[in-house]
Amino acid sequence: MSVIRELLIGGKETPARSGRTVDVVNPHTGNRFVTVAAAAAADVTAAVDAAAAEFETWSALGPFERRAIFLTAADLLEQRIEEAADTMAGEVAAARGWAYFNVGLAANVFREAAAAITAPRGEVLTAAQPGVLGLAVREPIGVVAAIAPWNAPLILSARAVAAPLAAGNTVVLKPSEAAPLSSGLFVADVLREAGLPAGVLNVVTNDPADGPAVVAALIADERVRAVNFTGSTEVGRIVGTLAAQHLKPAVLELGGKNSVLVLADADVGYAVRAAVFATFANSGQICMSADRILVHESLAAQFTAELAAVVSNLPTGGPEDPATVVGPLVNTAAAQRVSALVADAVGKGATVVAGGGEPTGALHPATVLTNVPATAEIFRAEIFGPVSVVETFATDEEAIAMANDTENGLSAGVITENGTHGLKVARRLRTGIVHINDQSVGDEPQAPFGGFKGSGYGRFGGRWGIEAFSNTRWVTLATEQARFPG
Image (tube, rainbow, N blue to C red; front, side, top):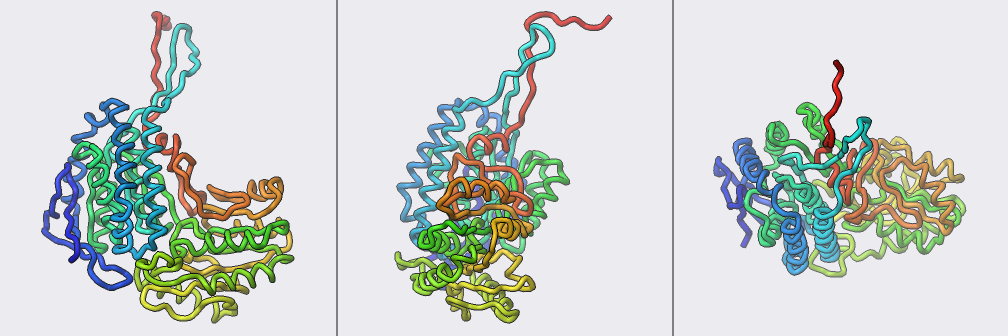
C-alpha cells in the first residue's frame, strides 16, 4: 500500500487548496510508492505566511535550546536508518549502502548546525573616531527558500535547511518531485520530532508540471530574503535569475563535469579503485561524479585494462540486494538519456571497453568509453549516469587544460604518490573543490562546499553556510560624546 502525505504548513499536515495530488512511482518496480499533495501558488503563500509568523520567536530562542533540537534530530535520524533506506529505495531506487551513507552524513550536517549555533559570530572592528567601539555582527535575515534535489535526498535536504535554521531563519522547503519524502518531508518529520517549533520549517510538494510556477511564487514573495538551490546548471540559471530579479542572494550548487587526473607517479591499482568509486557510486548520479578520468599516457594501457575488468564485474541490480553497486537510475527517461549519449559517442568513433548496450528499464549498464571525440555530446554534457570516459595526456600542462576545458567547475581529484606534485596541479584547476591523492566525490559538513563557473556560487558548510544565510551589520557604540562640525 502506498503512502499518502500532505503539505506541512505551520506544523500541520495540510492538503493543497485545490485538492490535487500527484503520485511518485518506484523507478525499479514501476509501482506507486507515495501520493503527495500538489501545491500551487496559494499554498506557497500560506507556507511563507507560517514561516514569517514564526521568524521573530525562532530567532530569539536561546542558542542552547536551538542547539539541542539539532543534536536530537541527528540521533533520531540515525535511529530511523532502515526507514530512511526503505524510503530512498521506494522513491529513487537507491542502493542500501548509498542510503546508509545519506543518513550518516545528514546526521552530521545537523550536528555541525548545532555547533554553529553556539560558535562565535561577528568581529570587533577598528574605529576612526576616539571612544567608538565598532562591531560587525551577523543576524538572521528572515524566511529562506530552499529547493532540494533527489539524488542524495537526505544529505541535500538536511543541508538545504540546517544552516538557514541554525542562523536563526525560518524556511520553506520545496523538495524534488522525484523524492518528496526523502528530500523533504522525512527530514521535516525528524526535526519536528526533535522539538522544532511548528511553522519554523514548512514543506510544499508539487506536481512536476507545476514546479516552475511554485518556485517562481516562492522566490517572488517579498518576505523570502534568500534562496538556496541544488540541482542542474540549466535550472540553476533560472533560479539565480529569479533571485537576482528580486534582489535576493542565492546559494547555487549546480552540475559538474568533473575530472580525476591520474598523474605519471600514481599507483595504478589505487587509481582504478578511486576511479570506480568516483564514477559509479550511486550509479553516477552525484554532482561530484567523475565524468572523465584523465590518465598519463605511460599508465593508460594498464589503467584502462584494469578499470574495464573491474567495471565489467560490478554487481548490478535492484536496491533490495545489499550487494548492488550499480542500481537503477531515477527513472527510465534518465537511463534512455544516458544510453543516447553513449550511442552518439560510439557513432562518432568512441570505443566501448566495458559495458555498453541498451538499458533495461531504468537500469543502465556500467560503461567505460575511450577515444571519445570532441564532437560527441558526452564530451561536454554532464553524464549523471554510470559511464566513465577515459582520456590520456602527455604533460601536466595538457592535463590541466583538459580538466579546465568545461563550463563547469565543481570538483576534481588528483591521484599521485607525490603530494607536492599533486598540490602544484591542484592549485591550477578551476574548481570549487579538489582532492589530492583522492577522487572527486567527497562531502563533509564543516567544509566550504560549492562550485565555480557553471557549477554555481556561494558555499554550504561550516561558517560559510552561516554567513550565506545571515545579514552582516556594522554597529558602533560611542563611549563618549562625538564632536560634530560647526
